[in-house]
Image (cartoon, rainbow, N blue to C red; front, side):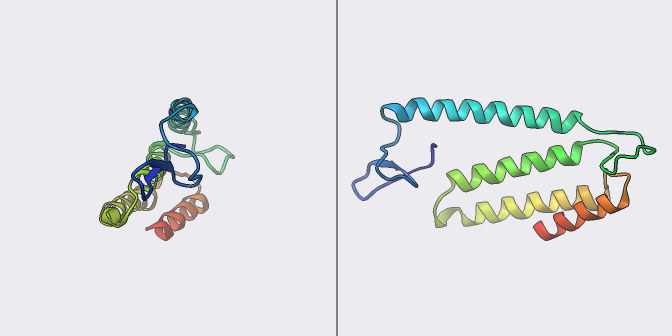
Length: 135
């Protein structure tokens, strides 16, 4: 909703819907509402992500894990990627994007591969492969 770029006349326009002028009229209300809802959604996702785990190794649940710190880190990484790719438009931000992706994916790989939070080795290997592909 708030992804805006300047057109040839110097007016801020929505990136996808160029007929909408940014931060005028209803766009202000929609932008504020979308930011608030995104903040609520991210907060709930992080709270659920950090508290929802089964810590018993004898559990029949294959997703049982020691803690949820790695998944919490994964949510932060996703949120950071969305923010970076939404607001850092243009070629001058390529190194910022590359540094964030490389650093974040390396951190995720280390947390999921070398310090796997899962008791089930198959699920741990699956997340390790996913993080390796991401890296």
